[in-house]
Length: 179
Ligand code: SF4
Ligand code: SF4
Ligand code: SF4
View 1 (spheres, protein in one colour):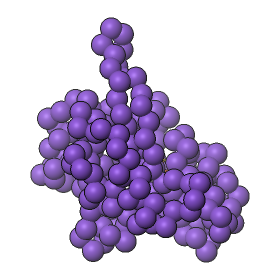
View 2 (cartoon, rainbow, N blue to C red; view 1 turned 90 degrees about the vertical axis):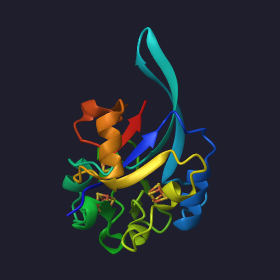
View 3 (cartoon, rainbow, N blue to C red; view 1 turned 120 degrees about the horizontal axis):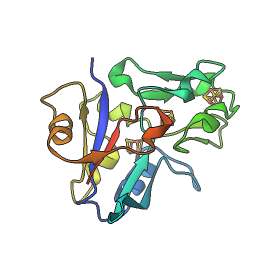
View 4 (cartoon, protein in one colour; view 1 turned 135 degrees about the vertical axis):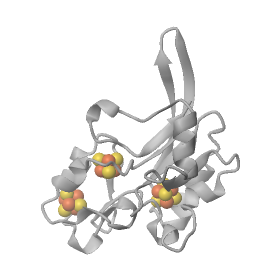
């Protein structure tokens, strides 16, 4: 069974926000909310510091405080690709998961449930790439099985310097940034 993750080449990202627009369109994300967003961050340690443009979203962590805190079981890890999802009709909108996520990846949808990036599971199940990955004009985003040593994501991680966000939170995030 796959364990999906994303690898993002920050050397190729130009911050055009096509991924943000694609996500909103594909997933009918309501006005004023986002499942993904762009951040410009300083990366590295002095004197080796450089600016990095990062497209960010839920990290589909291996350790999920957002799931363990959920009182109803709405937040869960799918068998398919270990994607972290919210079952809308089980969610009571209590916001415990919003507080538990170190990445601020979740919001309460106007319809009352917690929402966030789904890794576009509806597309991936059909063999398609997530919408954000598929539209990127510089092809800086890669999606695949981190447990398969022959996948493009695994090969990139083995061959390029990379980091994930807020590793000290201990959630074992599955989105990696190539530097
Ligand atoms: Fe949960 Fe936040 Fe990790 Fe996503 S980024 S799996 S919402 S802790
Ligand atoms: Fe669970 Fe919904 Fe509460 Fe989040 S807001 S912890 S998904 S019931
Ligand atoms: Fe949005 Fe899908 Fe990309 Fe997640 S994987 S940020 S839901 S387009």
